[in-house]
Amino acid sequence: MDYVLNILQAVLGIVNEMSPYLLLGFLLAGIMHAFIPDGWYTKYLSGNTFRSVVNAAVFGVPLPLCSCGVIPTAMSLRREGASRGAVVSFLIATPQTGVDSIFATYSLMGLPFAVVRPIAALFTAIIGGTFVNLSTKDAEETVPTDASRSYSEQPHLSFADRCLEALKFGFIEMMEDIGKWLVVGLIVAGLITVLVPDSFFEIFKDNTALSMLLVLCVSVPMYICATGSIPIAVALMLKGLTSGAALVMLMAGPACNVASILVVNKVLGKKTLLLYLAAIIGGSILFGFGIDYLLPREWFTEYLSNTHACCHDVASWFEWLCTGILTLLLLNVLRMRLMHQHTCGCEHDHCSHDAHHSHDSHGEASTHTYTVHGMTCNHCKKNVEKAIGTVKGVTSVTVDLQSGIATVTGDGINDDAIKEAVESIGFTL
Image (cartoon, rainbow, N blue to C red; front, side):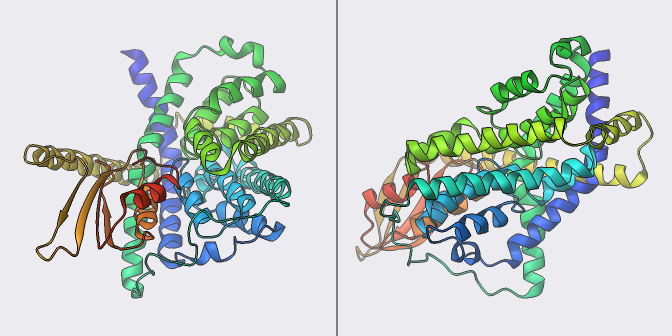
């Protein structure tokens, strides 16, 4: 029982520190989503050039896309004309950071980590994308589908509507996407803090090479979001791992996992995959050694020690208020998920979700129902809708994230074309 109370106390201390910055980050993410046009990014990512790689990295660093959401988004950019190098640059930079995770990094780990982290992500993304472009320089660059066709234009919204859209995206959709992984990260951090004895990491204490090897073995195949990795990195540092190894966790954990490895290999090829992994692992190790051997250690440890010492102090009323709001937002996501499961269960009592086709009375328009596997967040859902919408004959697409059911309406829809569109962005039909 004491262990449970200690874990809850450790988790609550971390949440109180992070919650104001998380809420601010989610708000900024919503503003970016609502006020930046859909096709704005793609416009600057075409062409097998160094400029497209740099643009992709610069655009990707502040974007609040989680590790799973960045995969279909990057593959969708590829379909719309982005070069291989730009896609890889985007895949490396985007999941490592985001406005929400940068603020959260500052709240728990201090300004030096909050500055070094996006710089490291930007550098590794540019290097990785450049090498991919150089490796395919002599090859004919082809786009998997017709990049000139757009499924839908962003509707004209008033300023008030965009503000509402920003709040919906930041505090509902993003909560749906990363809320679970944020909670997992907090719980893991609490478990490490309370249950793992300090002596366990004694062999790794002040040993950058061994610390990085341990972190890479754990973080490369594991799925963890940029924000959820922060409390885990803090807990590992407090147990003796070096600041450089913590940075490796913050970089390699979100940017690389089994899902992204499989999709990059399938869509972009084995050669591109190897360059992608080499850039992430090599870049994280390079910056990790730089932190441990070139920069003053107290930059990265003093703030952490002070924060840890203050965890037992009474949190301010503002921190408690932000923690309460964050809790309510997470509970709202849980409520929505439970309601959806109940509704879906009732529907299953009356109908089957197996793929089927139905026609109207005139035999012209038809409705096709498919099951899409592999979607994990709202970005996945939107990219599937966009990909299916580019198929000839499709007039409307509705995708349900929880059940994976895609309902497609149109005239003369070809099932193989739908399958190709969905698989081109890394999902299965």
